[in-house]
Length: 253
Image (tube, helix red, strand yellow):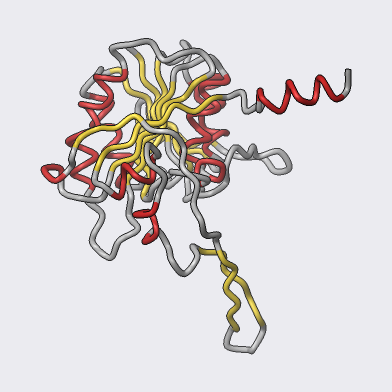
């Protein structure tokens, strides 16, 4: 099996090294194509108005001065003679749950692979606590989750979104298959001033952060994480709302 790994935190990110370990539990044919710099929250964007460069770091390892989507496209169309059998994205430094999936470059890389007809899984590790991020938890549980997921074929036009809680691996309660949750707070724009008194703005989590996840709806990715479970959520490429589609067909008939 040939596996392509990528991320949105950049080629030197610790989570990418963890993901390589996870991938090598499956095969020795691992390719790494990741952004040159941090590309968090770029979503499914492409580099269209400026050129980007690809740098070979070592055999089967490349950095791209572009987005995670650029990385997957470059790997499949330019760098790899044969299409990968599987694309893994992550392990992201921070959860990609609820509405976060719409902003995430980690999830977007898996989405691009899915659009290209390649099974894909995104991995993220929650870090919304004051404690150090516990990479060993993803390293321990990643191969277990991957092995279970690959026992069955990932359906066409579906990507798998995996989130690990930020606890030591022995404290993980188990694995739950979940739906995408909804947060009840919004990212805020913070206003600051530079030394010259000129205002600048910084987008960040709302004041509550993820503390209110304990009120998450049952069966969601948010509930799983707050209760120390690994969350596995299938996401669809087709985001058409079928119920509304039928209502509109009747209205415009």
